[in-house]
Length: 282
Length: 282
DNA sequence: GGGCGGCGATACCTCCCGGGTATCGATCCG
DNA sequence: CGGATCGATACCCGGGAGGTATCGCCGCCC
Image 1 (cartoon, rainbow over the protein chains, first blue to last red):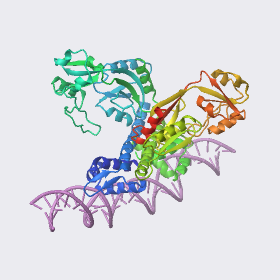
Image 2: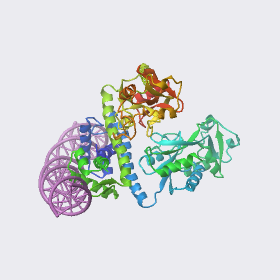
Image 3: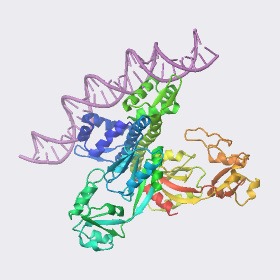
Image 4: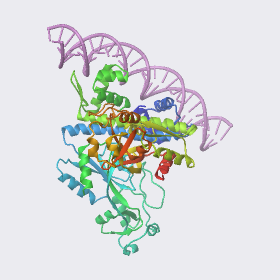
């Protein structure tokens, strides 16, 4: 199977429309139809059920979509990491660390300082991204190492070390009646129908259904809470950097959040190893 | 980057010889030279240092070799799992479990029985392989789930659950003076210069240097021990199925062996989930 | 219900590129 | 210094990827 075929199939499987997929790929529709047909014939498997009105994935097609994305990420990662290795050989080695914007705001500077103090450390570029994007960046080689937060992020497919575990707090507008309480339960939070939990985009960019406002990033979320439009359950550490117009109350029975440092498996980079060592020693 | 280019590069990088690599790929040497040259030009990276007498990998080339193999495995896995998904939709679903031949001889039947007793379980094909091969089979889709033994096998890049941890014993010919001892230390074992530890093949098929005999599988190892040519440090559980002409003595300070059940990340298979559940409940 | 529009498949052409053979140039060896 | 080895280059050929035109099928709507 060639990556071209995989890219074509993934495009069609995502669009469920040959014309749009072809447009996205920058080719005409007929060669795309033919390519998918050839792929199916070579695999001996029907990947798509097409009527002249709708295209749907078969069971096998769904598997190839998932596995094919992973494979394409791996190929892309190979290419990117090779380029970076060539750069590192001639110029600055550098390291890209990715984390969710707004998370681990206290841990990150400590980690960077500790690592920078080590002998032989290299420059670390910090990449902040939205929730759920980190895994992709680590998988396709755009980042070398990441701070993930279980159970929100999945460590599937990565090597990792646990760094710390913390409880969660609910963040409310300052002055909200509940801010006087010493602690709350999840039931109290879900009962806040006037301050619903926000909805984060899924990996495909769409939003789940629900009452809460749609948010894209951390700053936007805090803004919405300050405006009295939402509330959010966040790790305790976010409390330290809260805006003055917000307040936080511990939620006793919220799931604990574990911060882990994760990197692609088989990473042979000395720099990653050093950063991980610095992190575990914090 | 196309998988064809990757396959070509991996072949050359492994052979370090364009002629032999071309032969292995079933093409002539000139197109191969050209393909590698094009790949280098497109990446803007020198992958191979060639004189007319020798070919060596650059730093970047070594990275692409490692990452490229992983990417090719991922592509192969996508293909294989798609085919299997198509089969599962029409015929028997089936599941392939891979484990090292000779290991977990007591755990495996218990696991298979426990899983078979579950409602909705599917047929499980057991694949026995040499040490170090399991990871490859799991990565390229030939197996769905595997029993690995840390620290010998690496769980890098897989999801896994720990099943049990055990000590190790040294296996000696029956009647050897040390078999009378209640327990030993690693120092006692390494002092056995007349019964050296065997050498296992690396993933590329070559053997490390050392005094011990070269072995390929478990049966061969036991045979060599019985012949008085070697000794081996193995997990305790192997004691239960020892031949009558062999004896085992616990080694107190040998590293503990943890048996884990591992599967490719993002596996959505119900069958794998069921097998893992059965394993953790043992 | 018949014409229309949208969509995937098919037919057919073109041209690029992957693969082959022949040969060159460099380097090591006897 | 001549032969052997090995990668690069030159050149040719054929298959296949991509394009345009068109067909066939099916909802939809006046």
